[in-house]
Amino acid sequence: MTEQPCPFCEIVAGRAPATVVADWPETFAIVPLNPVVDGHLLVIPKAHVTDFVADPATSATTMLRAADLAGGHPAGSMNLITSRGRAATQSVWHLHLVPRAEGDGLALPWYSGRGKRVAS
Image (cartoon, rainbow, N blue to C red; front, side, top):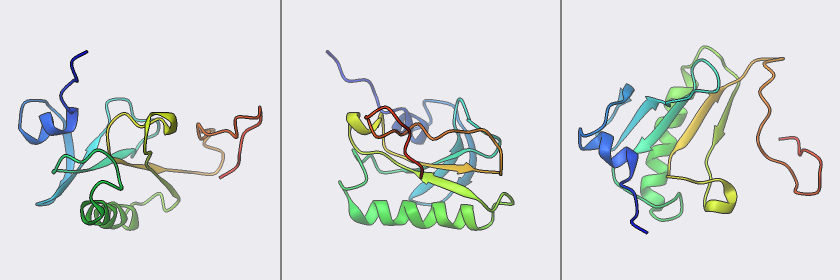
């Protein structure tokens, strides 16, 4: 089985389109293809890394940029979500910034595996 190119590396290289909302020398933020709410963003390192433990300095810089964006977001309330490994639903490495509002009806996808949802 041939590994697919990283979609974010394709964006960085200019071979794939994206709606870029912020661009720094080492990181960028885009609107995902299927945002779950208005204002949902992906914050992505420009250097390819496999997950958030692969390069702690890159992860820290990406988190710094996500915090910058979240701090200035009008929604105020927000989830910052990342995953490591297929069992944790990781497909490629990035941070999700998901604005939240009381009663928005957006359920987090996590559950305990024992039949009932876990509150965050």
